[in-house]
Image (cartoon, rainbow, N blue to C red; front, side, top):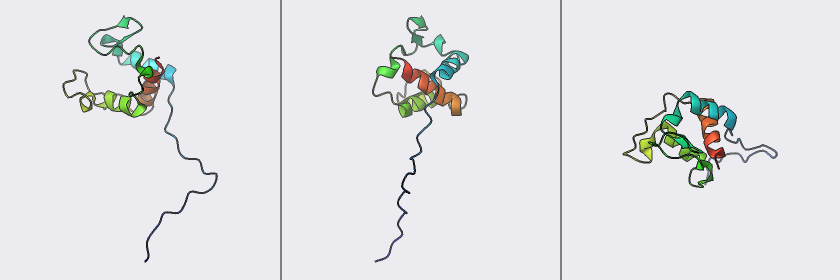
Length: 105
């Protein structure tokens, strides 16, 4: 029996971790995209969207979940009135925004 197998990882090779993001930079992305027009944090902001005050304390709101929610809210809730930001918030801005939201506890 023959087969093709992947080589085992080299000793000492670190697994590539996803980018962690910078919460302070994410706060600027939040402000620049006027997220506070709909969302509230610590009593400040709109009431149309979800209150994000303790967003980071929700264990179900992983970085992957938040990324999907920002890019396409209808992926979680088909009737969501939140617009998709997949074309507007990308790359480091998206990573930083997610880090900021996860820091809210």
